[in-house]
Amino acid sequence: MLQLRSLLTVADNTGAKKVSMIGMPGKGNRHFAYLGEVINVVVKDAIPFAQVKKSDKLSAVIVRTHKEKKRRDGSYIRFDDNACVILAEKGGKDPKGTRIFGPIAKEVKDNGFNKIASLAEEIY
Image (cartoon, rainbow, N blue to C red):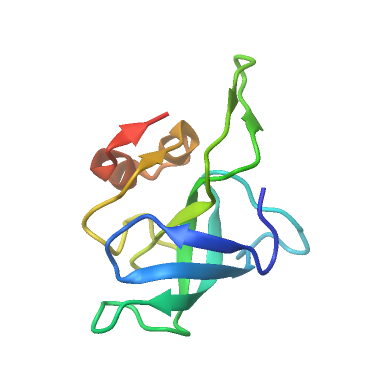
């Protein structure tokens, strides 16, 4: 569960290290975003000479949240950090990077991000 101005780590190799959530496209006045949802972010910290630069506005999908999420089977999933993967274009489903670091939630694949799920090390 993330809200505006939440800081997230980036779980891919685009060069961004930290991003801040600035909105949710098409969700109106909703306050919180959850696993597998697309959000708008701004890059706060990036490595030099990378694909993305500091202060770039991008789209990303949430792949890990610290707040637990209850699943339909009654189990809960929770991660150590809040993380996202940067998307190639707004409204698209493909990642901008070529590698995904760390585990991702099953909800990401259920929401149609199959390319991200295939690049991930582990799916929980």
